[in-house]
Amino acid sequence: MPYVEKTPKTWSAICIAIYLAGMAHMGVDAIPDEIGLWLGLCALFLLVLLPCLAVPFSKFVYHRIRMDAETLRVGRECIPLTAIDPVSVQTASQLAPPTTPKQYAASLNAVDVPLPGLRACDFGNPRIVGGGWSVPMGMDSVVIRTRQGEQLRIATRDRAALLTALARATKIVNRQP
Image (cartoon, rainbow, N blue to C red; front, side, top):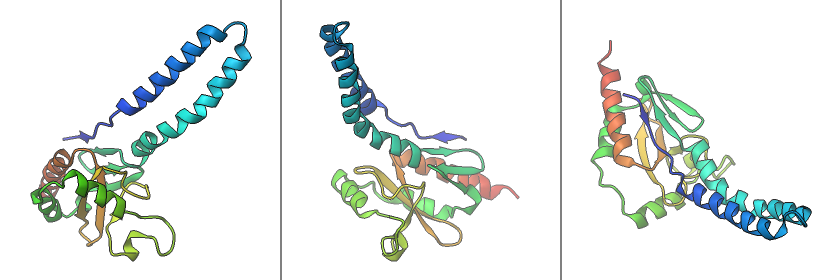
């Protein structure tokens, strides 16, 4: 029953390939005569590469979803499956998936900055799970509840697979004595 949401690596691979190809192209002309200049340019262009890789890295750290028989792990947070309300999972799975413009609008409005007045609970919105401050632009999100009534927003790349795995897992957990 384990579920792991795969993280796409296409953007990272493209950025790193362009960086390496550019550095190799410049190195053909510069090495061995001007190795210091070439190393300086490598470092300079690395400063351009790092921001391009920051978003995929933060998605990996804060929105990586893994589930085993007892726990749902989203980013840096662990939620016991016994704490998840199975009715909310069923309700979320019955909702129609949002269109792309609605996904973008929802991700723009899903903010949970750890500052007074900017918390999601201050606006009556669900808390974002995983440790991130918002849902990454264009990612879909699923809202479920805990048995205590707290609403949780989980950023996901595959809404249907996550909800199917959650529904199956909460049924199995609730059947155990």
